[in-house]
Length: 148
Image 1 (cartoon, rainbow, N blue to C red):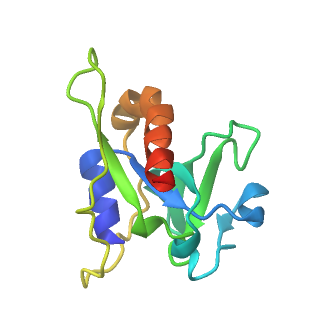
Image 2 (cartoon, rainbow, N blue to C red; image 1 turned 180 degrees about the horizontal axis):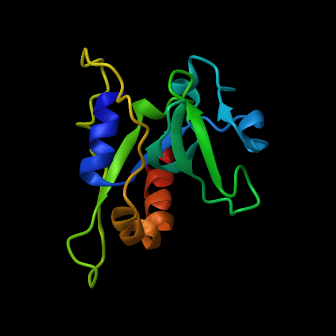
């Protein structure tokens, strides 16, 4: 968990693959823990990981603000729908050019021996504001990656 949090703080939002089962489709609020423990075997959807709370990961879905909690979901740290197994980052070298999309397999989420951050955090607005326009591109690339 600490490695994912560090990646969020260093690189900004991360593209993640999750298993969007039927219960996921009908999520409305609270911490979602409705995925099976082997969800990594069924990853079928891409969302954008933007931060965390004391209880779980905060992610933005592209299904609009009528889905979930105004377009967001809070995923349980343990039953995380397989997200820790498929994630990548978007690197933008210039706001005036096309973004370079990078699926980074180096995000190693094995236990680092440390404990989770005691203070809930979210990626600062100054970081997320620049990434907002690239959410759709990120989701399309990750979805394409899932299909290949």
